[in-house]
Image 1 (cartoon, rainbow, N blue to C red):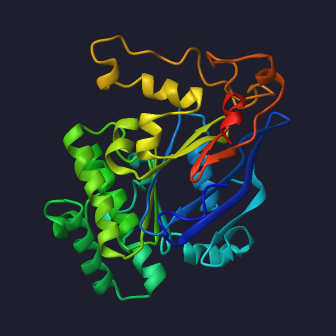
Image 2: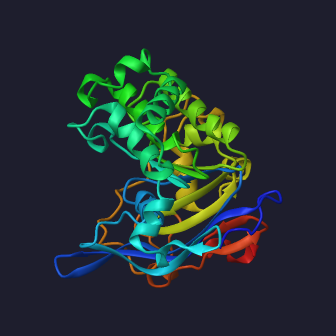
Length: 333
């Protein structure tokens, strides 16, 4: 598991031994297999990895949004404010979702309901959780839409998602997530397909949540390490449904320990490789049913040896707050 403290900050979420699987054509595919991590108050935590690494499924499991069937959370615990979210009734989980733990989903056009106005979709969360009048809910919705940079928010409350650009739809999704000032915000690829200027504005909006609610934590799920470098304090690297490395942001960029982490960093431009061709990680992420039985990265790893192919390494703490899953780093513990 990750370190128990983050500069002395209180833990607001504890995920232990999380296993999530999907039944596919008579086989069981493990999208998340034994994930352990903590989220601390006021923390900006990054979860990185290629598509298919298990990042989004981890977040959806925490909010209990895994479609069942074909998916299910098979094992583990998710402790929030002293309660195991996996043991809550559906009704009790709905009280937590959106109010205390919110999520910005990928693909805002498909996440927004095309047949309801923007105003209806933003106020729905407020009226469900706070039982306020329509007038008060509308005022709060207009306020939060203005906060996320929607011009003429009062007029646009009556518009539909197709009347907004991609960047504006993403802002609406953020408004829906922020409207109840949650304690934890999961942001799943919130800046994908947005230009650099809009990306910066979106990240600033998420930081505004922490300013408005003391102790609020943000978990950024992304494959964009440049965004992680600008915003996050600590990073979890995932591959094959497992955590492969955990480190502070400076540790991760200055001294990556896992070959997969090094591969991710080598694929982005920075001072060390200035002027040189960027190096790509060979091959592709295997299908969910076709990961190796040993180390999940061994089929693409430049440092692979025979033990890697038959024995999966444990996630070990090599120094306080620094964890890695690799046979090559066992002597560092």
